[in-house]
Length: 146
Image (tube, rainbow, N blue to C red; front, top):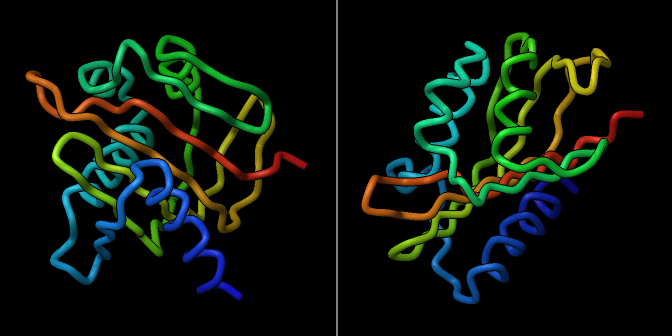
């Protein structure tokens, strides 16, 4: 069941890009894995200033409680209050200018003022290569708030 879910999330990334260039964490940790790890380090530290340097002005996210643009996402991150977390089951799809990463995170977090207990949930993030480096363009948090 778990591998079927991971495969489903990987296929989403492939469909978004329209090609089948899937890499996994076993392939010497693709660049997308490092981007996600840095993002989570910055979120844990509530370092919105660091994230502001790589979030796209066209950024969009979707969460159980609604959508956010780049400014709204940065505000959420400032007030996120993450506990310890574990990232796992990375699936990375890369082409020359876009990286899509699906993965699971186990984390205790506060979202929309509600403290959510630690449990494994799926996420999707994508980055686009620009002259200034990789920009975070989308994020999907598919964890239900209950």
